[in-house]
Image (cartoon, rainbow, N blue to C red; front, side, top):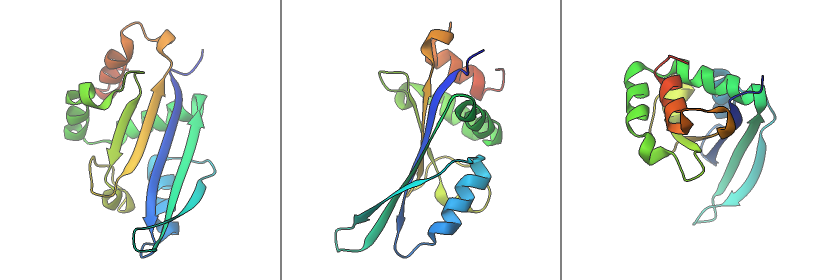
Amino acid sequence: MTSPIQSLEVSYLVHSTEDKERIDSAVEDTLGIKAPMTTEELAGHFGNRIVHVSCRLTGGAASSAFMGLAQRLSSSARKELVGSLGETLDEHSTLYIRLDRQSLVKGEIALGGREPIRVRVKPRLFQMKEGATGFFKRTLEGTA
């Protein structure tokens, strides 16, 4: 059977004053992502170096990463995410999650943050009888 998640993308910015390897390691270890990260060098407003890091998983790897993320969220974070599905799903039923980078570096998964780790989850709609909202609600509430 095909995975219910088509793709999962993770992206974040790393400023020149931050330890990129530490953040990369936290993302890989805490989110369970074992895929190559792509980087793009950017320049900040004052010419400071900024690196945009991203990774895209598909199929089973994407589904596994999303299920792991959903399980590691605290119950209050899951409730918050379920409660905001109307705001975090776009017109293509893609779910957008912002994770707190400081918590992630500590090995924890929490929502929010000023400089977030962005997670974009695209479902396979044809496999979802209840639609994306119902699927994400069921998965985040732990009944999937």
